[in-house]
Structure formats: C-alpha cells, structure tokens
Image (cartoon, rainbow, N blue to C red; front, side):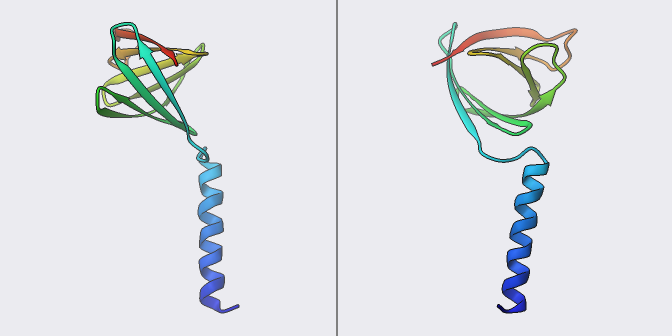
Length: 105
C-alpha cells in the first residue's frame, strides 16, 4: 500500500471518528402534521436538528431541557417529547411565544 493511500485511509478514519465523538452519525427524519395546518419535516443528527417549516430550513442545536429534547436556532425553539413537538418564536424560555403544536405522522 502506498503512503498516499495509507494517508487517505487515515484521514477518512479520523473524520469518521470525529463525527461519532461530536455526536454525528446517522440522521433520522420525522414528518409532523401541525394543528394550524403546517407540515414540518425535522432531520435529527446527533446534537443538531434541521427543521423545515413551510419551505424554510431552520438550523438548530440542542439546548438544556427539563423534559423532552429542545433545539434552538435561527430565532426559533423546536421542542419534542415522544411523538409531539412544539414550535416557538424566540429562544429565551422567558419570552418564547408558541406558534404551533405538531404530531409525528
């Protein structure tokens, strides 16, 4: 095996390892139907969620939560628990405003 091939394999292995250590890995996509008629698609990868709401992608990261999983980013909060999820405008728990309640389909 050449030195170049060995170096490429080493880089690929380290990249994969860093992804696992950073909470990366396989993505899970869930589709939700919301009370106000919106359809939401959320893709969860490690500590990250990409929430697509009415064609707009919101990039979010996990945040401290007393119950369920809470993601914040792009000025929104996405809070899931079981098959339920709630979308809020804002990221500060003291001032967030509920936008919609959703359920996984």
